[in-house]
Image 1 (cartoon, rainbow, N blue to C red):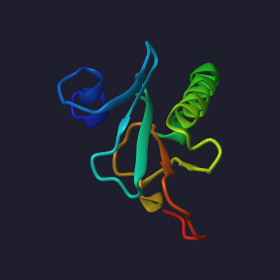
Image 2 (image 1 turned 180 degrees about the vertical axis):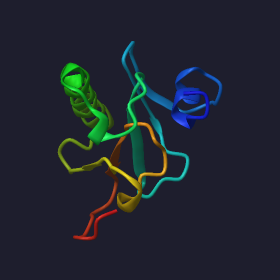
Image 3 (image 1 turned 30 degrees about the vertical axis):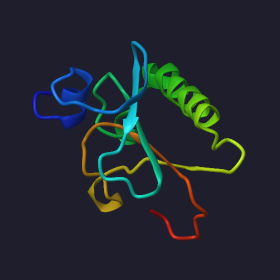
Length: 114
């Protein structure tokens, strides 16, 4: 997608602070963090949102959650806790139309959903 900011990050057109990268997944620090730790995990394949996932994407989604697990352990939040969020659609607050997951951590969270 030519106008997708995450596709531009994947293609190296926009710089990012990369935390993890392989042939299918990219993780980078959010430029507008909502918590002390705020990392975005995206598939390199352009998929607009959860609702657009197909059965052939099951392995990719599994890989994303394996990456989330690895990042949590690497940065030491596996024991203290973290939240994983994926917004789906405008009413849920999805501002970038590219499937992405937020890892949020670094301080105690209340019941409030971010």
